[in-house]
Image (tube, rainbow, N blue to C red; front, side, top):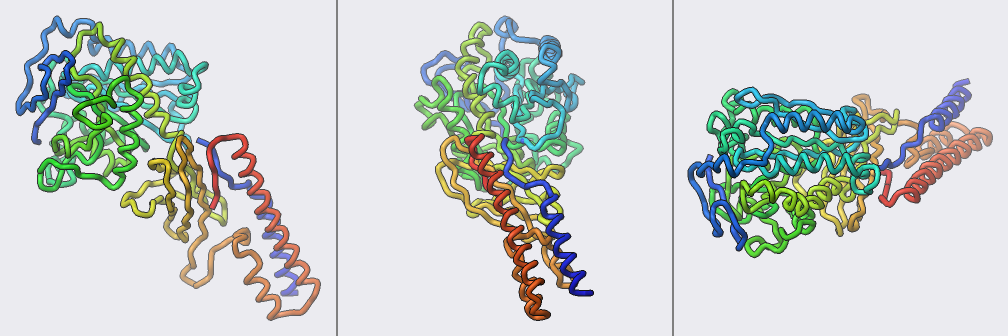
Length: 493
C-alpha cells in the first residue's frame, strides 16, 4: 500500500505541474560652482566659460516675458490632464518653501496603475534661474498626447513605460528669478553625499529635497534626467571625488552611463558637435566636482540611473527661441525614455514551487551595483550598454541563485525570466517542486530501484519523466512564439 500511495502521489504531482500556468518571458514595466559654456553662440553671461562662486545677477523682467508663470504652469498641467485624461494623471509630491505644489504629470496607457514596466522621470527647474526645462517638459507631454496614436515612438513610450514629468522643482526660485530656493539653498547641493558627511540631518533638508527623496522611496524609477541650463552637455556620475580634486571619476556603471549620455547628445541637433566636451558628454567630476548633488544620490539610494542635462548655453534665452530649443531637444528627450524599452535586460523572478513572483536582486558580473526586483511583480529592469555579453545572476532569500549569460545587440533588449529553486530547509530536505524538471526523476529512480523491481512502477516513472519532458517543450514553444511576435530576445532560466 505504501508503494501504491507513493506512485499515486507522484502522478498527482505531475498533474499539478500541468495545471500551473506556463512561466515564460514577457515583453516590455556645498560648494557652489556653476559653469556657463560659450562656444561662439550668444549667451546671457558672455561667450566664454566662467565659474561663479556666488549668486549670479537676476535676469530682467523684460527678459522673462513669454515664459509661463507658476500659475500659468499649474493651469497648463491641469488642462493637459483633462485633454489627455486617457493616458495621464496629475499629482503632487509635496510643496515648496512658499507652499506651491510640486506638480507631476504621469503618462502611461494605465496611469496610476502598478505594472511590471520600467518608469522614467524628468525633472526641470532645479535651479530657479534655469527655466528652459520647465517649458520643454510641458511641450514634451503635449507632443506625446498629440502623437501617441500615430507615432511609433510615442506609442512605444505610452504602452511600455510610466513617464513622470515634474516641470518645476523650484517654483519659488523661478518667481524670484534666482538660482536657489526661498531659503537661499541650492537644491542640487542639498542631498546626502557619498564622500562627505553633509546633509545627513533629515530635518535640515529643504522641503523640495525631502519631496524628491520621498518620491523615490514610494516609486521605483529605472532612469531619470534633470534639465538644467548654462551649457550644452549630457553629464553623468560620479559628480564628485573623494579628495575634491577635478578628474574623471567613474561610477560602477560608467559604460552604461556613457551610452545613455550619447543617446541624448547624438539625438540632439548640435550637442555632440561640442568643441569643449567630446561627443557632447562629460563625467561630472572631470568637469567640476560638486557634493550633495541629486544625480549621484539617485543612483546610490534610489536605484535610478540619472543624467544631468545641460540643454541651453543661455540660461534664460528669449521666449521666442523656445520653439527652436524644443525642436533641437525633442528627439533626445524621446529617445532617452525609449531606451528603457529598446535596450538592457528585463524580466521577472519566480519561485519554481508555486510560480509566485519573488522580490529578489539582480547583479551583473564585473559591475558592483545591484538592481532590486519590484516587491509586488518581481520585475527588474537592468540598463546595460549594448554590444556585449553579460553574466546576469538573480537571487532571493531562501532560494538558490541562478545565473544566465545574455548577449545585448544594438537596440535589442533581452527579456530574461528567472525561476528559482528553494534552498534546503533546516531539516535537510529540499523544498522543491516535482516540476523542477532540471533534475526530474533522477532521485526518484534511485529510490525505486532500491525498493522494488516492479516493472509497472518503473514504467510509471518513465511516463512521469516523459510528461516533464513534454512540459519543458511546451514552455520552449511558448517562448518561441513570443520571439516570433516580438523583436526582443527572451530567455527563461
